[in-house]
Length: 237
Ligand code: ADP
Ligand code: ADP
Image 1 (cartoon, protein in one colour):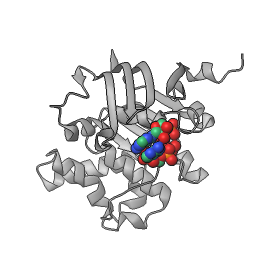
Image 2: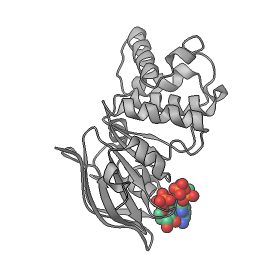
Image 3: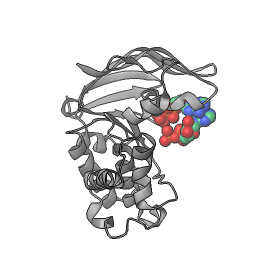
Image 4: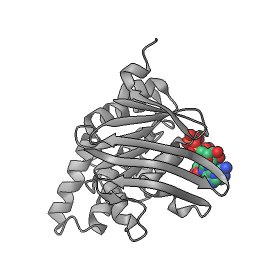
């Protein structure tokens, strides 16, 4: 059964139709990459999956967008709860200017996932372990996150996203601001995370799509022109 069922989705910024009648299912625990030239709508479509475009006044989304059996655009739906289920990692690492611990503890605390300090400590440790950061930061959890390297900051943002036990993690060019070694670490992490989460990743890099994804969706001028198993997209005819 599909995690997302998206039907006849259109997205407008004012008069500009940035997404043109796209229908797509995304399976549970798959890694699907959105690729295509700059401005083709990858990021716009990604942001529909957790209503991240709600804050843009000119933006209007039509069609049917279902996450399991919930209507993502139901106006009565609480977006905070939706975004805990569908987490997001951005191009530029954006940790809070707080301690490493606080970055990860924040979400579980506001969602009431831990009643005792020991439970919160455990969630923080597990999330940092899953993000491959625990050994690097366990002795300096009180240090400010913004003092970390870019790659560490991005893995911290991944830890922050998974700390609230989401089902889906959206990643919008998560490696574009990282050097090759940090990129390789994040790609390795994506492979591990795919065992537990559905991952949708926007990338401008076909090589990255080929390395990390099971399926690739190719966008052009707001259309979804091809979606196929990644191994088939990247084999020559
Ligand atoms: P990318 O191609 O990496 O998605 P862009 O440079 O297209 O990045 O967009 C960066 C930011 O600018 C995004 O937040 C996007 O929503 C916003 N943006 C892009 N195009 C426009 C536009 N025509 N008018 C207003 N904001 C825009
Ligand atoms: P991509 O992620 O593939 O680079 P985007 O989704 O950022 O593409 O942009 C798709 C189209 O939507 C572009 O024409 C862009 O200018 C427009 N767009 C993106 N964000 C905004 C925004 N905040 N306001 C107005 N137009 C936007």
